[in-house]
Image (cartoon, rainbow, N blue to C red):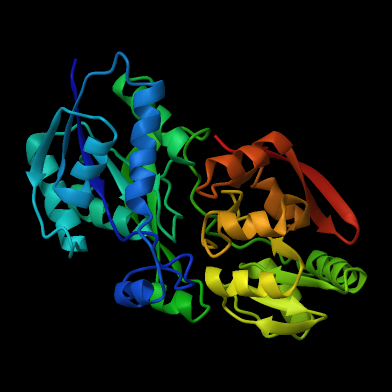
Length: 378
């Protein structure tokens, strides 16, 4: 039986990440001016090529999509031929309205699944139109990806598409989350449940929505983590330290009397801030200046990502310059209860493979106390 798949790409999704804008909504021109390059078209094409190479042999799919970079180009470049363009737009000026109108066409055509490439904003736009009428599956490509409809990475998404076509996956409720980008850029984390979509329930391939509830205070553990990081800085006096984003790292920075960017990347040298809210280019300039560097990361609760979600400034080039041995991953024990594995999605297959080959990573959970946690890529 032939499956009908609606396919849509948000061409500008993720462009604000490496240039430190924490999103692209409303700041597209600024992102371009800072040197941002398209991310989503390559991610979409990567997923499609993996699907064709590994899973498509016996699958029968008819693809419905938009013109240009909103879907057709990616499908064609991946080698897919049975494509029907059902919505056309100005390829150079796409918008959320185009996504919604395309999804309305998908509804009218009775597609079985909508596969989209973007972030939480794109997921929200798709959901606004289709609600729970059609299951949706996201190829992760945005800056913000907290919703439960995204595959862990392009490989997982390709496999999920195949298994969906073969009716071997369960369909169920998935949270659509979104973050206020304006507040996010000011360092305020205001994430909200936007709605419940029909998604694919498969914890091996689908990322779990970020934990929404607060647990008992871990301040005592965080104090121990602070002492650990202070020791690291004192013992590595000639190292530049990049402080990642998130509440645990923010707590440590403030305990050290360092004014920290809660949702950005800051640089510290000999206990002094030498760079704030850095984008990729600024980080690279600092790495050229300081020959040795370490980066402090903390996993997103429940999801387990340390790279590839909310910190795209730490690009594959940056991580390769720093080296995997110079990553310091910290977490409170209570967070690890809900984070059974550490995940990365750097966007670079070679680098992801290096992480995969490690199999495990040491996570600091207290003063001079670490726990071994499994790394999972797919």
